Every structure is written in structure tokens, then in C-alpha cells.
Image (cartoon, rainbow, N blue to C red; front, side):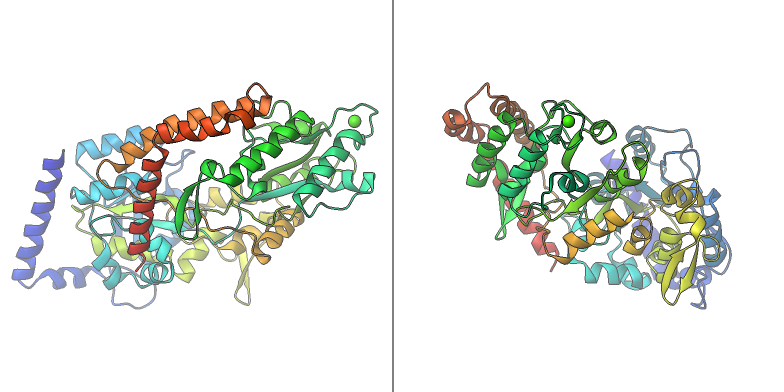
Length: 515
Ligand code: CA
């Protein structure tokens, strides 16, 4: 396949040379592109072909938002992928194998796949196109070195663009405020106080049924990974003073499990913590059994509304992290990226179209829908109309149906979600953001040659061993104190030092790309 792309790239290159030699490259571009008056990208209506697999059976060009963008810019999309294709990986691999690419290719595995295909010649390098035609994209990359590093391949070229997310927290600690009130307790502000509240939930019958059936701490994510965060580490890669560290090799990790093993033995942690699964909140909040969890702000706070009638007085509120640190920031970039095919004869139009989505106006289409229908401008604040926020569908569903929030790369605006977050969620996000609890996120790194295969192989073995061992500690079938040194030795035997080195090298490369 490599050969085919090189041939394609060579073909494109020789055309470009021929055009330049004849002095007609700019003429060709100028005859297509609009003169820069208003939002029109091209003089005549132009179509860009697109590969993008979306859930649901709607193509972007059939939505009202993308129809209005087409009117405004003179550029419309035509999706070439089938509406019914549900397996994105298979469809993408078939497309690439065919060698017949549309102008724009969108894919969720952009970070791992696009640089490779770009360096093989299938996708156009975008650096010069962005500099020349895409001021909004350029501004985004200039102002966000980590986004630039994310999209830069190891050859220094940019082969795809991604959407951006506002820097914000993903999840946090939630506790039953109504249970605290009932037991006359204050909100815990330290790990010891958090522990003591869980004990009180266990013993004090806060659900008032006369049975000791409360589940003080639970999680819909299997295992105790989130409890580890209380002890200043993470069961994964983290950054400490510019160095990559694997959490389970640190002294903090030992302290974490000394406590967690004890908490489990004390009955403070759900007995089904490893198996309860994704419905844990629905069941344990819904049956008035669950006391505290660590989870997403938006969806957790919604239980106050969902359970208002069935669990009288139900009130779950975010609390500050008892240890003052939160590790679950949201990724600054979206997984889905868009590349421009190297064989496209509309590269300038394509990059300008992508750039429009990063303009103030384009961004409003993707975040808020259509002005006068979904939102109105109040000063410079796009305020959703009441039917969007309080309709019979969720705001997200209404906007997605309209073609907003489509996934096509654009900057996400926090004002989009702050308007429909229920008060308890908004209060939680504000609490975490305004107090600086958020720890630096571990970036998505790129690897060279066989680094990624090697890292994956080591980490697959490490994670399996880690999961098995920590579960034995928690259940008490293996003594943590007696086995901790052997555990560390086994991590080394499985190659954790080599994996850390690979991560450190990739991280230094990532820092280099931000310059
Ligand atoms: Ca009870």
C-alpha cells in the first residue's frame, strides 16, 4: 500500500510543479476562492466530499446547521460513507485500502492513524495551508501549544485537525447531602473526615429503614481506581516535576492501598465494587442505598432531578476533593480528527472550510445551533431558548438533531454546557475550577518506530498483573504488607522501567513540538 501512496504523492507533486512552472497555480486558486468579502469561501457553490461515520442515520449535509453553513460559505459537504456503516474501523480501513479518498476524511482514531498515513503520502501536510488560508486555526494552534503538539507528526508536519475542549474538570467527589444533614454531620474536608463520614453512613441508618443496608462508597467504574486518587497518586501514568512516573511504583500508591484494604474490610466500600458496573448509580442512588461516589459532574447531579419524586429529600452534592487534588481533567482535544486527502484538488477550499468552523460564527453553529431558533445573542452571550433547555428532549439531543455538536472539529465553548448543567453540577464544576484542584493532565503522546508496540506489550502485562494483585489485596486473599516488595519486583520484571523510558522520551518530544 505504501507504494501506492508514494505514487499518488508523486503525481500530486508533479502537477503542482507543472502548475507553478506555468505560473497558473495561483490563478487556479484565485479563480475558485472568493475575494474575501463576507463569509463566502468560494465564488461558485462548491462541494467537498467527506468520509465520516456517525451514529444515527443522518449525514451532516442533511442537517439544518450544515445547510445554513453551506448557504453562508458557498461550500457544502457530501458524505461518501454509508449511513448504515456502523463499524468505523472497518469502514476506514476499507476506504484507505481503496486508495480512492474524498476531500475530507474524519476518524476517531486520528491521533494513532493519521500521522502514519500522512507520512506515507495519503494526506496533505497542512502547515502551509494553515499559515496561508486558516487564520482561526492558526490562532488556535499558536495559543495552545499542547494542541499543536497533539497534531504534529514526528516528521514535523500537521496532517489533521481536531476539535478543542475548554479546560475543565471531568469528574469529582459527590456525597449525599441529605444523609449528612440527617446525621448532623459536616461535609468532609480531609481524607480522615471522609473516612469518618463513610463510617457514619454505614452505622447511622441515614436511609431510615432500620436496616444496616447502606453502601457508603460505590462506583460505576469497576475497581477502586478513583479511591486511589484520595492518596495523591493515580493508578496510571502521571507527571511529577516534569518527569513521567507510573503511579503504582510510588510510595503514595502503597499508602493508598494500606487505606483502601482497611476501608474495604470495614465495610465502607461496596462489596460489589469490581462487578457492579455501569448501572451502579441508577441502582444504589435509585434504591436510596448509596452514599458517596466519584463521577461525572453533569450526569451525577442530574440524579437530584431524576429521583426527586421516588426518593424524597434526595440531595447529592459535589464536595471539594478531600485531599485537595483532582486528576480527572477533560482532554483538551477531541478524538475525532479531520485530514485532507493529498489527491484533493480543493485543498484550499477544504482548509478554509475547516477554518470557518473555528471562527466566532462557525463555532456558534457547532455549539449553539441556529441563531433565532436555538439561541439568541444577549450582548455577546449566546443564550439558548427555553425550549432547548427545558424541552421534552435533552439539550444535547435537540442540538445534535439540528447538526450542532456534530463532532466535526470545532472549538467547544463552555457556555454551551454551562446553560444546561443542573445547579448542583455547575456548582461542582465551579468549585473544582476556581480552587485549583486540577492536576496537570497526562498528555496523549505520539510514538516512533516500534515504541508503541513495545509499550503496549509491556503495559498489557502490567495492567493484568496490577488488576489481579490489587483485587487480591482488597479482598484480603493476599497480604499487601507481605507482598508489596515482590509486587514492585514483578513490575520491574514485566518491563515497567523500559515503559517509563519510552513514555519519558515521547513526553520530551511532545514538549519539543510545543516550541
Ligand atoms: Ca438503612
